[in-house]
Length: 167
Image (cartoon, rainbow, N blue to C red):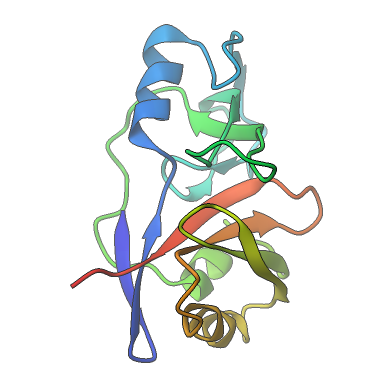
């Protein structure tokens, strides 16, 4: 987990759910109660546990993940990559969306989807590195927005979650 300040609006970037990581690595079962798939990375697969692209020949896991915790029409499952081994490289320093783009984790265009506490969608925007921070600030200026989900534009897969920083 990482904290970042966005123009006086504090937020934190949250990697994938720790419970899910442990379940996938230890039980080898995903959120749909199906076996996970192990493979060797070609390089570039976005690893949601460490928020970076996989390196060539790293052992990775492909599994179905649900980033939602409540029942409802927006609850969905999708494929995610994780490193097969716990390398303890989850970032401890604050991250920005721009940094994740520069490091190759996010593409040159991605989707920011704003959700309420009840996990109903409120708004969605296409974002580019130069406009992402401004869009995040605008989404969080709506008091009804509880969190923002970042998704890859082309495939629509879950990337990460951005939450309000609670002081």
